[in-house]
Length: 266
Ligand SMILES: Nc1nc2c(ncn2[C@@H]2O[C@H](COP(=O)(O)OP(=O)(O)OP(=O)(O)O)[C@@H](O)[C@H]2O)c(=O)[nH]1
Image (cartoon, rainbow, N blue to C red; front, side, top):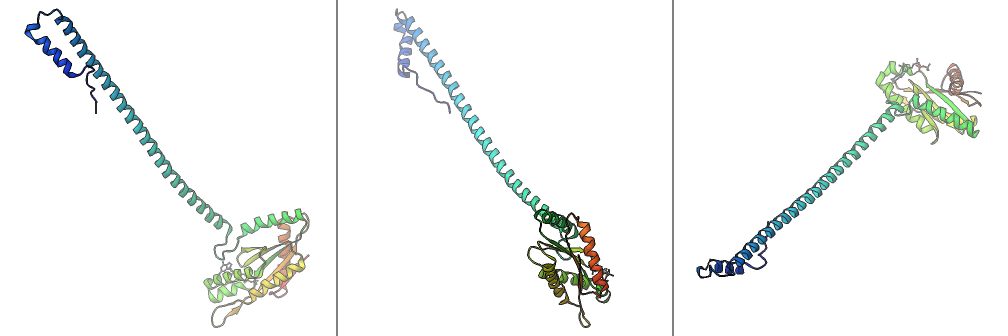
């Protein structure tokens, strides 16, 4: 709202001056002309003052509006940034979850939940490098379930799948906390035993063999499971395929010798 300031001399004095100037008896008075000029001057000053006030008020209003809208804009921007930060947090969480499930899917056997061949191969490479660097022994063992085809043939593929899950549980039970193990493929499993001598490995492997031997499959004429094992230790300078080949030779011997046994290849 525009404020109007009273004229400096006050409206009453101007009214008195005006009345004097209009008095017919004073029309010829020697001061009449000077008084009229003084009145005009006072009125002009009043008008200038009024105009200046309006400009000043307008400027203040403009300033206030400008500052307010700046604060508003700042506020709006802050709210938007808050929202963006929340969306970004959620987005990162989702991305992390997707990455995690992709990583799991890439490394895990979907049936048994054990590590898959890809993951095992990576870990085997790592463990070989570590064993070489630290000059510690390492044992690799291949395990193959005996006559697994019979399970599928007699009880069906679904029972076969359940049996594979139970076998995975038996492997988990038999190994130590720091051993690396997983499903190598089909009805074949792989164990990597770091910092383990051949003698120590034999005890671990035989524990797994007994765990598998405790599994029975099917109702009525149920079948007991068994598995054969071939193991070997790392030789200096070997790569994963060298040690895998020797473990496979030992496994073949275990099968040939009648199954449900553990064979070693030096
Ligand atoms: N249910 C089921 N069966 C599988 C899976 N992967 C492999 N098999 C079966 O495992 C069987 C393996 O058979 P073979 O290689 O002949 O060996 P085996 O019958 O175990 O006999 P040996 O190894 O000689 O003792 C095949 O019948 C495959 O179909 C699976 O994921 N689920």
